[in-house]
Image (cartoon, rainbow, N blue to C red):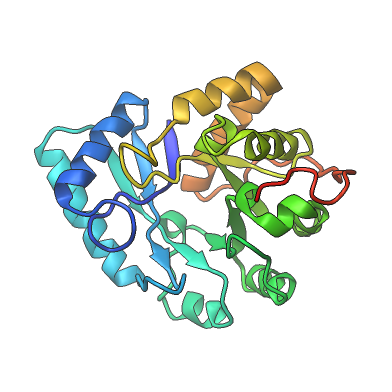
Length: 255
C-alpha cells in the first residue's frame, strides 16, 4: 500500500516531533501494510515554511535511519502547500516540492473557506504543466456547504484526496457522509492518511479501504489503490466523469 500524504518528518511541522516519533510512525505504517509513503510537510500555511531542498535532506536522513533499523518503509519527497499567490514562482524556482518529483502537486485550502483566487490559481498551475490535488476537501466548511465548488474544480481537471480517517468516521458522521458522497460522485481520486502521529492522528488506512470496498465496491477499491501507484510513477491516474451533488446548502453541517 502507498500513502501519499503524511507528516512523518521530525521537527519541521505539526507532525512527528522527534526522530523517535518518526520511527514509531514508520513501524505503525508498516503494520497497516504501507511500504511507500510520501512525506508532505506543511508549507506556507501561516505557521510553517518548508522548502524543497530542506525536505529532501530530511527525507534522505530518515530513509537512512529506517534502513539501518530494518524498517521496510521507503519515504519519498512531497509537500502540502497552502494555496498562495506565489505558487507558480515557487514551483518554477524549486521552492515547492511536487509529489515524488512528478507533475502532481498538493494544494491545501484554509479549513473554513475556499480563497477567491483559487479558480484562477488552479488554472494557472495546470497551464504551467502541473496537476493540482486538493487535499482533504471533505474537511473544508465552504465545500461542505456548497459542494458545487469542488465539482467545478474537478470538472476542469483538478484532482482531490480525502483523508482515511474521514472515510472511517474518525472526524464524525457528517464528514464521513460527505467523504462517501464525494466518492459516489467521482469528486475524489485518492485516499491518504494525513498521519501526524500514532495516537490522535494515525494512519487508519486499512480501515478506510475496508469501508471503501464494503460501501463502494471492489472497482473503487482497486482504482484508488492503483491511483496512488500511478501518482508515484508520474502516470495519468484513473478518473471518472464527475457528477454534481444536488444537495441543499449546509446539508453536511460540518461545523
